Image (cartoon, rainbow, N blue to C red; front, side, top):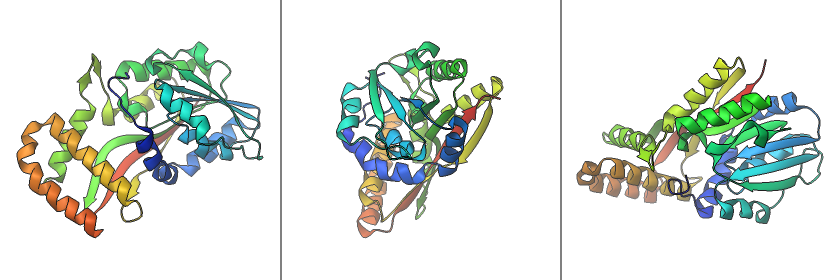
Length: 272
């Protein structure tokens, strides 16, 4: 998986404020009610530098222990360097890290979990990996909060005739085969929802879009460039049309008149 997913600390730091704004407070509050009073053991899958922990820990009772699972040792190392959050009662949480391939997660790895979380993870996994994670969570029996899974829907303003063409190519890129893995991309959140429903669990969704504009110009610019690059990688024929499109969009970025809504969906699942 490490050859497929290359995530920089700079990108994670850039997106963290918008992630925090977009995540569903309603689902987080419901998760807090489900887990009740501490002590709590939270397993965070695909933790990166710990942004989910920093956002959610203050909304949960304590004491808390977080186990950060990621395939990138450099990212999880940064979790402690970026500051350890406190729980709702003001106590610093305890943090452990586990560097691993997430497709190998099993129920025993989540033993004793009060809550399992993940953020911006599902859409970069294969069907087999999502099934493995869902199976492990169901066997563990702890509530699961999955945030910021992309749905594939993007709305740029002002609109342009090529927007839908680039969106389709980007979504195809998200579903590509890489190193023998067929990624789920925008289908991932629906697959996860179906797996938990098949297991007889409650599932509660929430729409959690990024709304990018003048308040986050650098994030908007970085997101847009990456969106276009992935579309062109998937469909090289777009290169002939992309030059004028990019020139126009970059001018709109510079003038502060471009905005984007990038749709995500959060899911809270828990056993009946």
